[in-house]
Length: 100
Picture 1 (cartoon, helix red, strand yellow):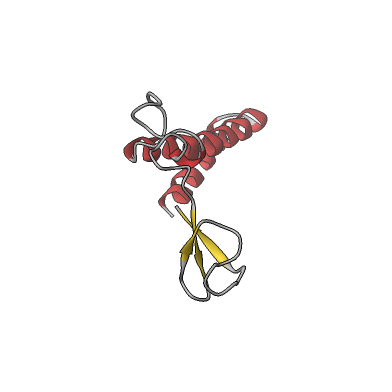
Picture 2 (picture 1 turned 90 degrees about the vertical axis):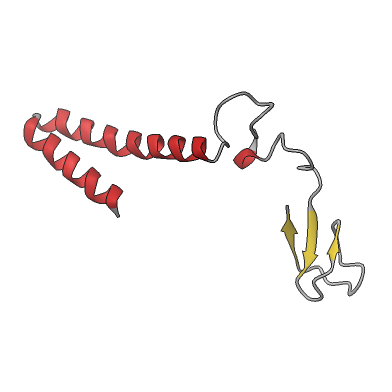
């Protein structure tokens, strides 16, 4: 909510100060760059973005280089049995969700 209000105030201010095409381009640039900056700052706080690849996770959402990331288990939605994949060995159901 704060982001929407801040970007609206900044874009209206830029469009009042700068002539038409330049104000619109600057407002769109800020509207695109500001969320990218916020995302980068939030990901660096969670230690999942940037830095060296040995201490921080890489790949998809920072899960690529963590220990044990290749071991995906599945949980059966019917009987809650944990298994490695395919159908559930306990009840034979194919309804499952991934557990990382």
